[in-house]
Image (tube, rainbow, N blue to C red; front, side):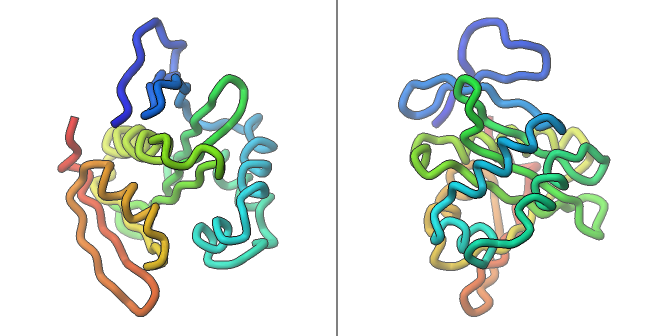
Length: 178
């Protein structure tokens, strides 16, 4: 489990201690982070791109990054920074339901299994609850065991529905554990 680190955080920045003891800064992404968001998603392996986007080499990374860093009432994105390096992104986009948002996460390959994704999801979940969102939804490929594990480790109750190779997940954010 990740924990909050001691020390005075900067405004809007939460320090989190990862499983390996490293301290990262979590904060809402902004327009000036676009190049880092693009770089993070481009350096994903072909398999990681497929698991995240359901395709290899998605042609729309720049447009995707622009949407991720755009601050609107319907979308929100947080980044995990180790020093100046963006090592993970979690974002949500509201669906047609006012209390529901689709969630997604990407973590740099070398930072897998450190608790980055779980910490990002928890941070994003708290922000979402503050904006009236009660449920996260996600479509995850059934072969994406790491993401399914992250969703379990985040500590929320969720329902799963299997549809061939895709798992449709609905997460109840009101069940978040401290």
